[in-house]
Image 1 (tube, helix red, strand yellow):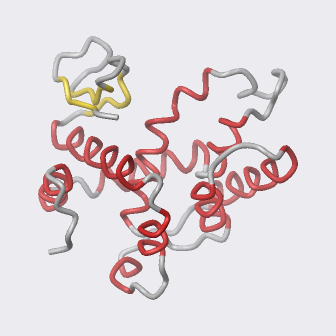
Image 2 (cartoon, one colour):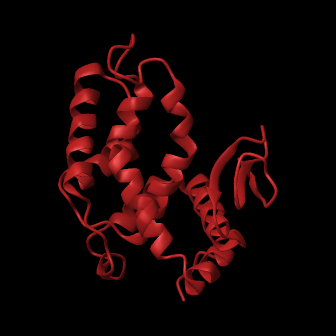
Amino acid sequence: MPWHIEGDNPGCTGYAVVKDEDREVVGCHRTRQQALAHLAALNAAEDDEDDDDLEEMIEDDADPLNRAAGYEPTGAMAEEAARGLAWRQEHGRGGTEVGVARARDISNRRTLPLETVNRMVSYFARHEIDKEGQGWSPGEDGYPSAGRIAWALWGGDPGRAWANAIADQNRATPNLDLARRILAGDNEPR
């Protein structure tokens, strides 16, 4: 699903990342560089969404380069991911196998590489709309909805805040160059 950046979108101050299909704003950013990095993460996630082999390769403990500069999930994220796993088992719905794997890593507070953090940013940006669905909040019919369960698997609101903060810290010029390479289809490490 293609996206683009708009500097004059009425729904954002700064730069908006907008879905081409329906012009939905999926993220607002203070700088164009942040919007470019978000766009790169969305495109990378789109390309890799169904690629379990790539996901496993990125998450592989045997790859010391990916694990060298990892980030440890917080306790609040671990609690939310564990809740998501319990809900999924109890209700038999919510999330994908990638989401379940992410929940296991988060609930075990396993160090996550920057690539995974960026996938989390992309996931949360794409699924913010799920919060508007029936069964999102306690007391609503169908609670917890499949969307609420999936959101929890990825660390929930604490996971979103954590991933966005890390992504913001890593939006320096070298990462802008990486984002541009990803957008151009060059995913090779340099």
